[in-house]
Length: 237
Image 1: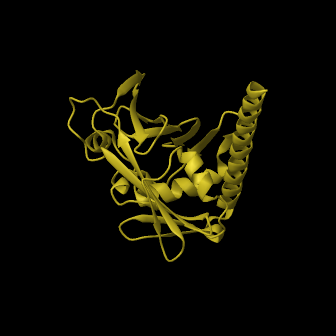
Image 2 (image 1 turned 120 degrees about the horizontal axis):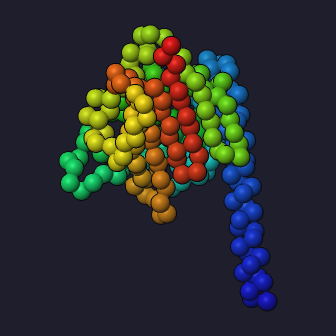
Image 3 (image 1 turned 45 degrees about the vertical axis):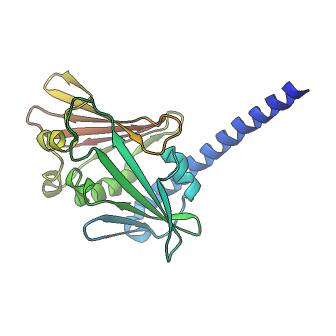
């Protein structure tokens, strides 16, 4: 009887996790639908940092923590509600010196336990500029979403002015240091960087694959975060 009870609890826990993750991705699809009319559903602000505000919040605090895969390093009470502070670290060889992006941070603000702001720090904007992030987000409305694979794939066409702000290979290696691995294919080369969450209890692998052409220009960025993947291909035609 005891074994049956334990089995029942285990099945219930797995079922709850599946139900929760399913609901999370449904709410993510709601956010994607909101991107169709970006200005009606989002606001962009901040001075040194980039603040993306959700005017019609769809994701809950528990959703954000589930997607990140770990608890925040700190939770602060604010006038609006609460603020989660997350820290990420770069996996690197012990022999290499710490690059500028050895540690990265992200802040998420909530009101009534719903996500209302993503706050991207000024340091991260040295790699992907404010214009690149905002324009990429706007075009994510056309992304192909494969729910079973937990994959979102988008082709991004930037204006020449914004395209010029994409990180070059030299800037990437200066900020992130030498890659954990590199793969050459024809004239292109993919640099692979691995990150983790400072508060992770279980490993939360974050793998960034950045592909550059022979001129050192970024063509593709693929980020696999735990079991979900986002692919952005930059159309340079």
